[in-house]
Image (tube, rainbow, N blue to C red; front, top):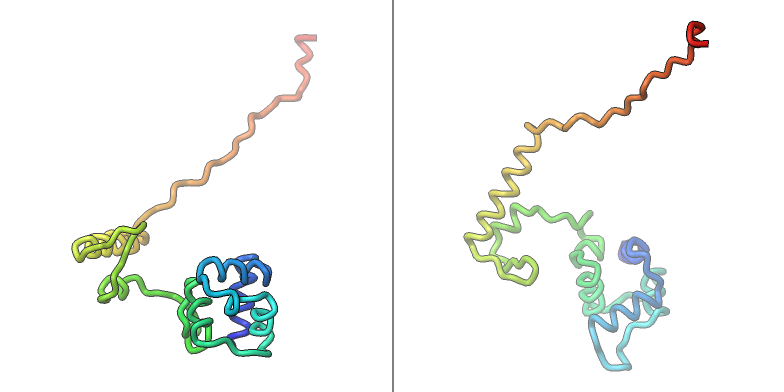
Length: 142
């Protein structure tokens, strides 16, 4: 499962193996000996080699998915925002920490938006009207 998911995530971001290796090395700097290489990532995608726990962590962080998703322990990487807002995890928005009152207000905004969607009507689509053109010849003018 891991090789398929890694390949799908990489291709979903339209990255080549060399591009992914370079981005991983930039985001997670290590010494020269432990840098990611295109052939290494290709071996992971083909199932020839298995990455270390640290490498799986780096990939999960880079692609913004859970390690469980990447390794096939869960089916998707969907997060329930309601659970996230009531969790004890620290939350940020654009680098600013959200305190409990921020979290509650944002939760209420999202909840109101979702529940209010069903009562909204869609504005009518614009219609194109074509003017009628009378092509009949009026003999009295000629």
